[in-house]
Image (cartoon, rainbow, N blue to C red; front, side):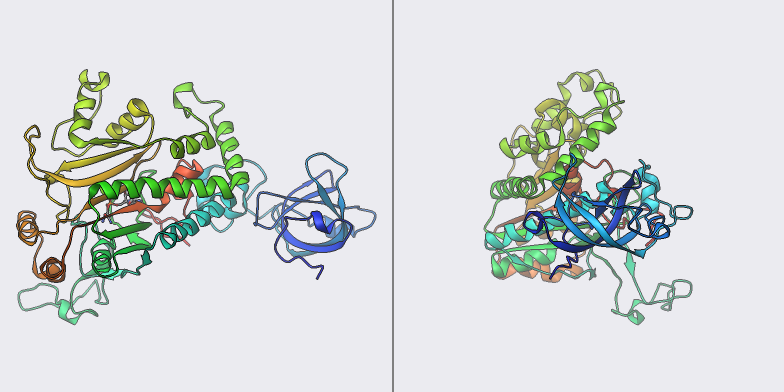
Length: 481
Ligand code: 4AD
Ligand code: MG
């Protein structure tokens, strides 16, 4: 076959042959050179056209992002910048893109504008690179777990439980919101709802993953999760993908080892398999930073950062140590920062950034958080004298430029301790009867974590906003496409 339907790479063996290719026009220079790309790689194929040979009216339709089909002879290129070029003998417009109407332009356009054009933005170099890498990371997730003896567990998207107890849920109902059936005392009558009880979109597959771990040993989930938190930041989505390994017989230290190994594997996979995309994204950032003041620029280039992370151990500290470090560090000592540090309060993003970017200058795993600020299922640590309050075996992995990429813990496997904790935190036992039975029958120590997939994609691609690493972002007020 001479017709190459998709792949515009690997041409060396075809030099001298007549071939047919299809793709989107990235540029048309000097009425002679078309840069054609079909989305498979960073490589454009240079197509050389001759106005004397081809129909002029046809060539006038070769606009930015038009889709074309070209047949011609593939030859070694005379010019610099590419190895081969295609001498067009026949050209066909598969789909025009009239520049008077087409919203995309062959020049730098703002990220905000491109978000509104999510149906076209994947045709750009930046977004096609990001989405190829995103695919690569997803593939590496499955490969890592498969190669290490884990089983992929599909946990439900619609559920009756709130795993995080944070109450930030999207409700799922078939009742008419304007006029729901009511019981005699005026409450909404959920017995008439589809599931005969209130349900929501899952905020985490963890509780169900624990069921899997206590039967299959090592499991992981990889699916969409939903949070109705009203945070309009560059790190939050209302719909994001989470990867949640859960492992029987693991404690918090095994869990930290797994988290570090897993993160490094994902980054290494992209370094190895997507060098051209990374180089492009790296130089894109350098261009963006050219006019920025020095303190706003990255300390290291993108590829340099990724290599540094895989080549160095993550720093490991306790929450209490983190608080002490922050308190004895200049900006906090002087009280210059918005959020003061107080044992027992959650670390703010600015605290995390200080630890990761200023103090240690590498990924940091913080563990043993105060029990009061963490979820009910985390394992209570035995009392330690020097700590003001109770702590749990929780861990957060913090990354430079991103903050928290992973949250996890060893789980409370002791039935009595768990029950007391649920009572403390007003988590109703009736709703989680099965979770309690998991402790009552054949329970064991176990641990796991959740990696925010988009945050990892952000770290690896260097994209500044999480909305630019998911094809169709869901954020407050935004559910287009
Ligand atoms: O820290 P979180 O809330 O932990 C859990 O949900 C646990 N049940 C996980 C587990 O132990 N199996 O969320 C885990 C990670 C965070 O570290 C963050 O990377 C990401 O999920 N995440 C978000 N990513 C994008 N948008 C949001 N709104 C996110 N909320 C959390
Ligand atoms: Mg968290």
